[in-house]
Image (cartoon, rainbow, N blue to C red):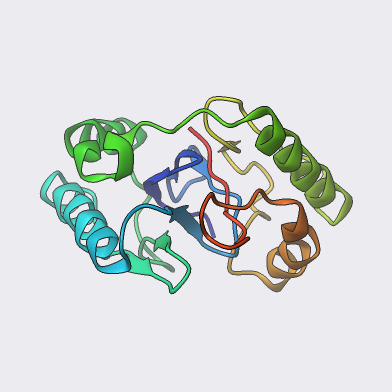
Length: 185
């Protein structure tokens, strides 16, 4: 299964279409965004506007879910859903990104956070994902077209690897040490 969404993470922008020709986020089992500055309700409302805008522009995606740690999980229909046209998704994302935190622009990672994310990537490679990429300084981890189809964040393999590696993820500022999940741009 491939993630089928364009996502903005405070550590980057991510998306992947159902035929594996996009990008996926590295995170806690779902593509997710983190924020330390918005309330859960504000973030849910903002990202719901993004999802509605994407639907209005031809991309069938459900409203995102916000967890108690300020992470937003975006998803797309599973199973027999038709592959999403990458150009159509990018065009919709351009029209809708103003509804994302920071207007759809990922903040640059600090040198310290970049090093932590490199350790996370190395750990993922050592735990079953040999092609797992290193982070990009301008916005997190970008997984382009999951060629092997094995980077399924819903799989037990992914969840097990992530559980072993999440210790390396940077903490969000002002959150008491909670780990942030990564994304790509």
